[in-house]
Image (cartoon, rainbow, N blue to C red; front, side, top):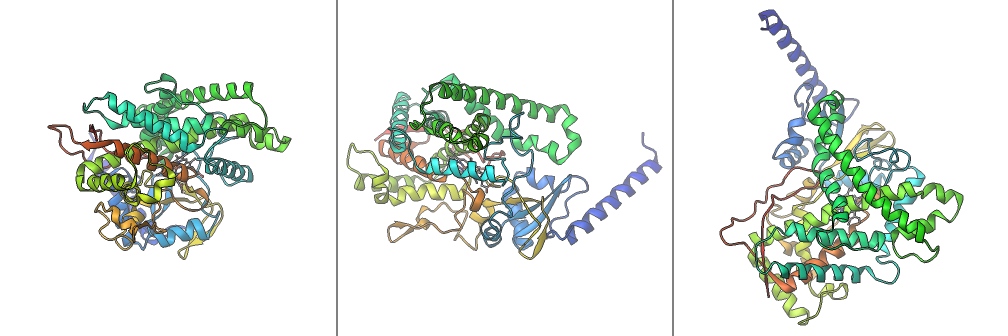
Length: 493
Ligand code: HEM
């Protein structure tokens, strides 16, 4: 039992700590922007892991002028919630905020020397690798098959798979996930896998596991002592195991490509990388095979979970808004001939269908905090001095729900992207980020979402299974924001 004296000492200590934290946080430390006081030691942990975290971050942002400092354990981060300051950070300052903090992503013995893209820094090699990958993805097609053909093939297979459900309720995630993974695997290594194929499932599961648990595992970065706590260590172990399993699968694919490689005749991204690697001694150093495996894993990490989950959000929203589905069907029926597929060439004819995707990504930006950034030099932002090494968080969710930028931001309204029958996207539509570290898969993702969604809608009508209630639109915690699982019935039109 604690004696009265011990109790008094502990209370006094906690009060002093609280006072110090409060004073420090209100004044801002090291010239950082001021921010919420939070609790002693744990700081604002409750905000980050709370159910209403995005609303709380947005309201803190409004209170402190669009930029504030948040303290959690050993980590002090500057959070940006206003579009003006966001643009100043990532566009006007080019590389000054384009770094990444250490240990934010999955690691093994190769990632320190040869990281993929997500966790890489801003050194010349990292910039070259990012540029090479971006250009390769933008070229939108390798070898003989164009990327559009590959996506349309996936959409046909998906439609067949859905027909097999025969009007029974099913969880849309499982079938859409296979299509999304196949789009990346056809770009990356010219292969596709059948629904339920175990090989691809290993990579998919490792990415889903990482996206769901990496935030929890981050607690040991924030509180270094926690890495010895068994339940936190369990998340790290599980992440490391799935990372290794994903890497083993990808390294098998790369070895086969190395054995079959014909220089100058690339079939896919892996072949292009091997061509680049063979150009000179210097390029062999920048584009080694061990980096290629990490880049491939990052392409899956960036592209698989995000596109799969976007489809889930679109389906959930359509169940809530049957009038939107009616408009999509009217548009598709009047603009696209019977028995014809929707293609990129006919995209401009169906702007409402595309606006539904843009509005879904506005309401549910899949990576709402972006990936953590880091200041690469001492610099100033919105008049505050930001020292080199400071972690900078871009709260895309705040920008995409800012009532000063969007009328009725909590209302699902695809029309907000239509002007005189044409799509118009404001520059503050930022679900893919902006600047030097923005998403390298944006073009691919938008084409994939459009082609698959439009062709699905051409074939089916989405209905709620009898007796089920509408899916919850609350966000589930993770790096990616998920809806709770739900079922749909797709009725052939
Ligand atoms: C709906 C789909 C997607 C969304 C919403 C999305 C969103 C994002 C966001 C917000 C970032 C972080 C930007 C930042 O830190 O400033 C990012 C980074 C990234 N994304 Fe995507 N993404 C999507 C699809 C894809 C696809 C299809 C790929 C690849 C095939 C991809 C690959 C990446 C990579 C490699 C990065 C890291 C870039 C870097 O660190 O320089 N993403 N994405």
